[in-house]
Amino acid sequence: MPTSMNVSLNDQGRRRRFRMPKAVVVGVSAACLALVVPLASASAPAAASTGTVTIGADLPLSGVLAFFGGYQKWGYEHAVQQVNASGGVMIGNHKEKVKLVILDDASDSTTAEANIETLISRYHVVGLLGSCTPPLVNANGIVAERSHVPMVTGCDPIVSFESVTKWNWVWDIFFYDPSLAALPFKTLAAYHVTTNHKVAILHDNGPDGMAVGGTLWPKDAAAAGYKVVSNSEFPTTTTDFGAAVASAKASGADIVLVDTDTPQAISIREQMASDQYTPKVIDMEKGAEPFQFSTAVKSLANGVMVGGYWSPSLPYPGAAQLAKLYERQTGNTPSQHIADSYVVAQVMLQAISRAHSTDPTAINKAIAATNGNYAVGHVHFNASGPKRHASVLNVVELQWQHGKTVQVYPIKTRQAKFLFPLP
Image (tube, rainbow, N blue to C red; front, side, top):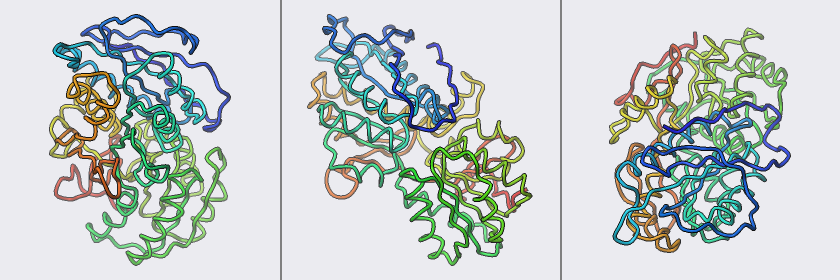
């Protein structure tokens, strides 16, 4: 099994001074030996063929998004391990093993761009796998697009992804932002719960925070008969949430909706407890999803909701087995990011095999033809019209209950009943 990289949390925000990345190389044997190698000069001559096919990934293995990057690294590596165990990918009429090179972007978009350039120029990758969140993934994609190297990614809400450009070489497998934003209101309606219909919103000023907290939640609240009585926006680097929480508490809102990264979500939840603010519903998008959120706030996580796109209880091929394998290998609670990253890598590897080639145009054409059932559901790219380079995943509402996230909506596939009101 590959060795795992240490993942550290940096609270200094996304914008960090550029540091030369290290690469994790996976897949030179059926056992997928992993090793850390120093980054050589981008002007170094191409290495002689070793009978392997090299793909690359940029991930936030440090910085504020490191929790997500750790999940993705496991998903990418697991897909490569599986394909190498079966002999590799088809190139011509024979199979070749896959080498996966992973660079750490430290949760910084400038580094994310540089890493993709390095993967292309130094490692000569034939395909790319994306990072996490719009600032990083879109930075990856812009470089891949202009370099004409195919890239498959998850972790980029589709509205944010599609707003960048008319993609030709980059493909996104993730949720549609408006569908996720509507989940809290649909969940409350499905369980017929009683609140005062007042909503307080706290969100960062990142692309997804602005889209969900600034635009979609107010619109959805009004459509569902709720009134937004407080809406606080803050920079992604903020560490003091006293004023935002005080505003929410003073508004008397029974429902608090939060969209921000994990360190901020932890601080907000703790500040609410410190201020003795106990609304009936808390939904924390993005930041409350990793198990590190629950570990940090302990019992305060109980009852907190977070929207998602995957649960091991869903009737998708291999979904339950994927979660069990992750738990067995790591001892940690699985995240939905193990699923989309695993499938993202599968789609890339299968496209290479269908192309029988390392030619980027042939691989890109094979990615476009993807149409099948995977551990995250059906994956199919719409070649024309809206969301032409995206495959939309179904969404589910998750809730922290006794140290684990469980699916509570849709009711027909739920793992547990909705915990209401918040303990």
